[in-house]
Length: 399
Image (cartoon, rainbow, N blue to C red; front, side, top):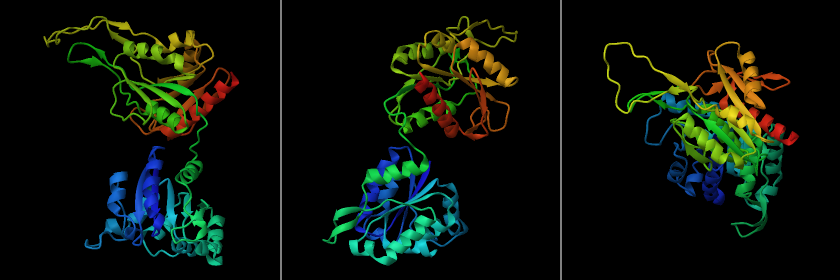
């Protein structure tokens, strides 16, 4: 998820660097927007280094660069792609601009252009904070749905004591998480997730595999981590980065995945088998490259271990969730798999549907339970993951 962080001109501007780090711990992608006054307290280079993203400081690009169409409409592009606008610290001036609809710079224009939720964390002198104009502006913003993180009381940089000190980094981050729906309801739980394809060698050069990208399994791992769970991610070969803080266990073959799952299953309350494990492997892999001869080549295949069924037979009170990538009779095949494997839930999808196949960022799934089915619309894989985790948590609580 992408956060636009507005930094305005106040002594507390240096704390915005700490806010960036704290938001990154929630796997949030941060882009900084700095007002001209903010640059008197901290440099854009600091935020560029911390975020890895361009820092926006001018409405129409750098002072020395000519304006162009891209810079002229950049506030619209940013407004459309961010999931939340956070302004911290928020000065009395920026609160007034927001309340009165003044588009005087990039940040105030972005506020008017975005439909994303807005969080402001005011920081200022106590007299400025208590002034009727400031309080009236805050009332206007609250009425419009802006979320306000109240400042703390204490000793202020100006030497006075009272309300106006920027709220704690954790309080600001918690408000962002609350607004975005990032909760720690899975804290204390361990969730094991499998992801990606497996590869079964034909010879030292070639292997059998499938089109799985691993995105669904990695989304499950990321969603579980964001919600406070300890995650064990057992993954076949992918081009994806492991979620920060997860136990990342790379494997290659179905047998390697089986051994890894059995080794770590005792630690987990919930097992989500999202990997696309090969059903067959060569009965005998060649130790040298199979040469082209011009003749037909017949491969003898044998079944790979059925990891889901093996876990289903000995799961005990654990919650076991499997996946079914289908091309026809989706629900019927998933329900048969549910019974055959001993799972509590099968997540089924028709991989021929647009937006539900391999290597996409969205999915269209049906959740198949022993007593019911729930069909979901096309959602991002992260949203699908959170829905699956909601049901996994409910099943676990029932036990």
